[in-house]
Length: 516
Image (cartoon, rainbow, N blue to C red; front, side, top):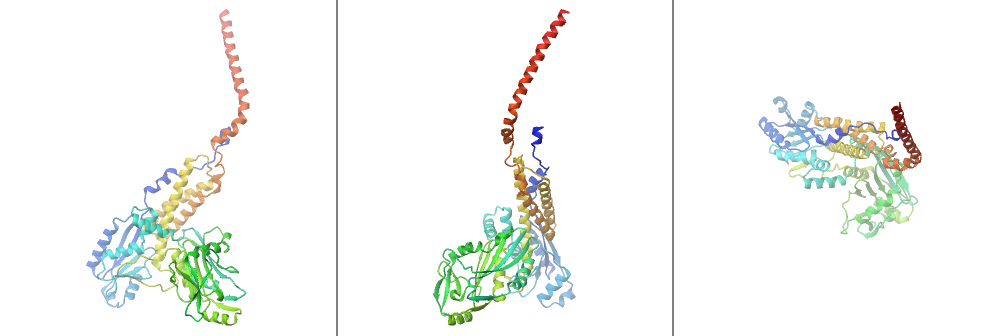
């Protein structure tokens, strides 16, 4: 009874099924459409692309060949009209892509902002596969996530993952405007409106696998500090006759000094900081210098900026030169106006860098259409969803297997109903997400992967499992034996006395029987 009353409550779990999750690798169906004027060329490209995808470690190609009637084709005179006609007849969904052949292209392949790319009549299947592998599918990231044996690609992918934000189910994006000397300058800027018009539409496109909350704040009397943060005056040929140099080495120290003053401790969610620092005219304009003493690349205008992986970015919004000239003439209070069209494109670029949407892999004879809207390109969003869906499934699987190994090895950890339900949910969602990836339903797979990841993390970090973590069976013996042993000794001796009594009584009864 004592042992039963001290047993640990543990819900039954699918141990063997969770351990077997790795036996079925993550496979995703990639739906590709191909249009060529010539049927023969279309068939050749299709055959060669299918051959190249046969040995792919993640993707299975679902290739659809498209065609148009001759009378419709004769009326099409521009590539944009051809693209519109094909998308109207064969609309693309999340995760799909379309190659369209067009003559008179300057390069072999022109990748648009939609889920389309134009290929020339001379473009090879190898070039098309390179575009898919490096830009559209970004396989080097997946090799890093899934642990490919390709060492060079894996190292490259891991480095890129290190330079991107760790994906979580919820992010706080905090835009902070710093005015270090409010007694000398008044900063005019509707930062809330700028966030609603620029940042929120951009982040809305990425909400397929994670959620964002955008907040803004103003902080006064906070200047940049840290080792080497004191700017150095440099003479130049501007009307002010000087600017102030900020060393590249001092930037990490500036982040460290600012972070504790930004108020991020009010939330448990990961926070991405977008800081806009407005230096007073007496210390402006600020310019960033590299270690070799040369000016760092500038976004242009009066704006200087830098990005820190996984943390965010800082923008130095220098006052206009005319504003500082007026201030230097009379050294009185100045009004500084911040223009969203100068600052917000820089913040959007920083978000693209933080979430690894920037494509830095050059391909010969391949052109990428420049950004024309605030939002990221449609296929970039698909790539973000696809990559992070696979990441979430893989991460949830790893978390569950680590948890199962821990629970199987330590038998006195409590597994209550909530933890058991979270583990069961995570396992079920992982299986369903893999199935949806396998059939090419990327949008549904992303939702399932996010649920699986959230449930797995909730189960792994549930505090109830620590209730009896420091109460193993050995401790039961150490606590209860001193309590019960003094009581049990007389009981054991009494059993010995009773046994002797019955042994002595038995020979006496036998003797009486013989006398009779």
